[in-house]
Length: 295
Image 1 (cartoon, rainbow, N blue to C red):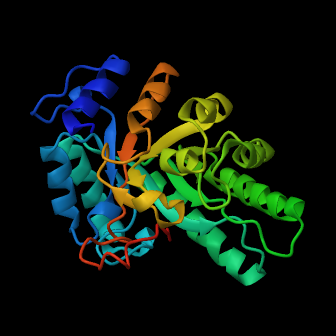
Image 2: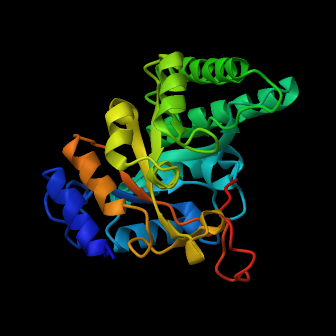
Image 3: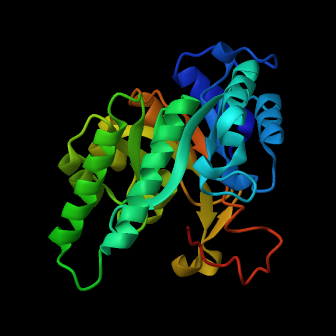
């Protein structure tokens, strides 16, 4: 099992950063972050306080309390938005990225327009929060539709969002997710978009569970990686269809190997822990938590 201390030491040493210290000096913090999926009930100040107390450098915003559509959150509108930026600065914290739920594969015009609108609003908020990335999903191959048609639609969506983000210091990062969990299809859509404001969010859990070794993923997509998600899981009784998330280091996903591959490859982004408590609360029954799904 990898302890948090071991992870901090590994990532800090790999990036030639100073050892993490207890005082909140931004230059001393190792590049680790956590997703707010793991603390769905925490208020804004609680999230910041916990991040600062435990030595995190950044926070991935994936919902705040009951609001998943972050641009609609009172915390990020009007005067409160400016206060939120000051709150982060006071603790030397950054927002690593904003997690939108926009799906680039959506074929129905009205639904697609809604997906694109969400992503664009997230880009605008990210710019105001000085967050460098907005995550979107690829996400599925449309049943009954030619593969090329779906791929072209995803590519067009990424390119449109890249253009929207132009000049904002925000990059749209497409996550390894859904039916795009291995390098070949991901490389196809990222290179197809061919936009400087489009990159890759490597959810290493999904690529590894899909059967791809970390070194192979990085070999194919390393030059596009801007942000990472790290988490662990194991299939009880060896049933891959019944895989469950577990504490990092106690499962079968090669998290430590992934970190080493990233560090050796010169990755300069955040290593973000993504515990999906919002989707898989521990209070639920064992049966209801059995299968890993994502929204």
